[in-house]
Every structure is written in structure tokens, then in C-alpha cells.
Image (cartoon, rainbow, N blue to C red):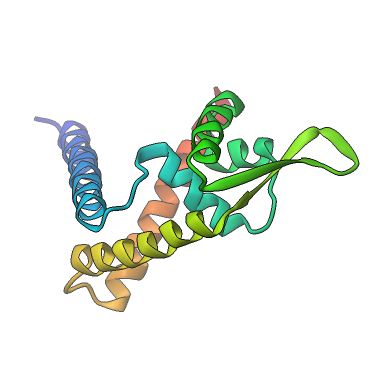
Length: 155
């Protein structure tokens, strides 16, 4: 086997491990959510957490861009979150084509419970890692993300 083939095999193995780790993380988080009674899942949960991160009243288009999903997907998730009482939408003053989105007290309670779960899962997942190892890991992920971004721009 050539050195180049060995490198590709090792890279494929690392990427497969990353996918397995992501699925295991998702399963553990979902299990903890079920145990705690958190009522939202998947993309809706990610959207609610993104609203918390972005702060007051981002537009739907900003949410779609930040989450790297279609505005139509955001609209569907927002509709469900709104009907369940987790968010409120209102027409932006000065631009009636734009909706501003904010989290309700019910939604904020879900966000806070979720933060506690994520913190506990992160602690479990990264147990035994030194600060240097965590910085190196973060750097590797940043480089991978940048490489993918550049490749997307080229195509």
C-alpha cells in the first residue's frame, strides 16, 4: 500500500469516528432531554438555542443564515415553536416584510434546562482532556471547517 493510500485510509477512519461521535453525542443529549422532560427536539431545539445566542429579535432570514438552513425550514420550525408557546413573532417596525422573533418565558425555561444538560454532556464527553488538548482539538476543527468553507467557495 502506498503512503498516500495509508493517509487516505487514516483520514477516512478519523472522519468515520467523527460521525460516530456525533451520533453518540446526539443520542446522549436526546436521552437526557427525555429524562428531564424537555419538550422540543432536533432542529426546533437548535433554533431556540440560536435565538438565545443571537439575542433580541433577529429576523427569520438572519436565523436561516446563522443556522445554514433554508428560510422555509426556519419558517416551519418557528411556526411550531410559536404554536407551542416557546417564541413570539411580530412584524418589524419599518419593514413589514420582516418578522422579528423573541423567546417567551416558557422558551427561556427550556433554554436554561438545555444549557444545564449540554454542560453536563460536555463535561462527560471531554473528561480527562487537558486545556492544551482542548485547544488543539478546537484548532483542528477550525481548520477542517475552514478547508470545507474554501472548497465550497471554489465549487
